[in-house]
Length: 257
Image (cartoon, rainbow, N blue to C red; front, side, top):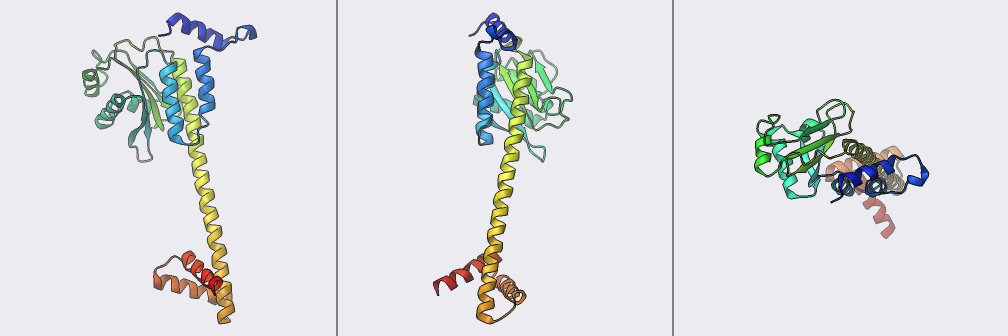
């Protein structure tokens, strides 16, 4: 285990302005690696990198998980370092109380810390249940920090010891949550953009094949473009087949003939 002194020295190197003192230690290296890995192609990979980095960077972190909140307000734990973290999170969702739920709703930095769950009165039901499961302290930070609640989720850190997270660098926790939230939002936007582009390509392809089918009917029946489209539309309804699929069949039949 890296000593507190080593971590303090490493942090000093991380923020040093003197280029001769800018060698990277574990803290700086993890942030550098996280920066590269947060370009992960999928949300799942992105979040896996986040919990791994958090467990390495945040001193005292024994269990790490990520809470995500969907558009309906429902919570889930898509990634975690241990099944116990999932159990702890799910109890919070059931009771509608606890640090990871509060972190999505707390204004400001969205940082929620409970150093001793054995004596805490913050969580009437979840606190005693978590202590019974062997957890002594917890920290959660919302994604994004400083954004208006409700936030899209939270980064959750657990320790088995009361006071086990007292040495944690809160700035690092907030930085991790902020960094991850930015990348997560970008990944989701990219996914949405790719889906929209795919739908656009499909729409253009459908329009193209419908145009070809209209040309076949105009040639065979000597009708206008409007009449050809009306034939396709009515036949599509009668056969309960999508217009694009029917058009594709008409074009394929012409090619076979």
